[in-house]
Length: 169
Image 1 (cartoon, rainbow, N blue to C red):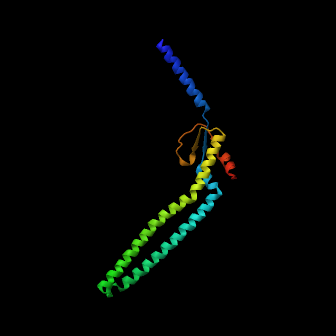
Image 2: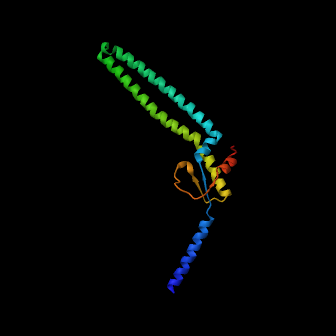
């Protein structure tokens, strides 16, 4: 009797799982390609490039100043009194440290600017993907640009739907 009840429960559970598995709908999209298609990305790319170039120009100016002071010091080092030589060496060391600090701050600043520029673009793409998933009753959407899907059964590519939602050609 217990075996019969256990068998009945197992049968009900298995049929329930089968029903759930049959209602799942899978889709996929290459979000990297989608982001590259969005016109805001080109604008963000050029803004970030200009920003990085301005920081690079400042760095080149600082480096040129350092090189100039270093050459001047090296050409006169033997004839300078010890006190002046120590001051010049300290000045060069301080300028070298400022250049290193500037490089580190510039990298952090570029990362921050990148986040500021691309964050809204990523959000817009993500929102469109979520809207399509809800409208078309997808259970899961996989991002193939991340390379994390090693194998998948047939699923719907939702790129055309999301492009239409975003007004892209």
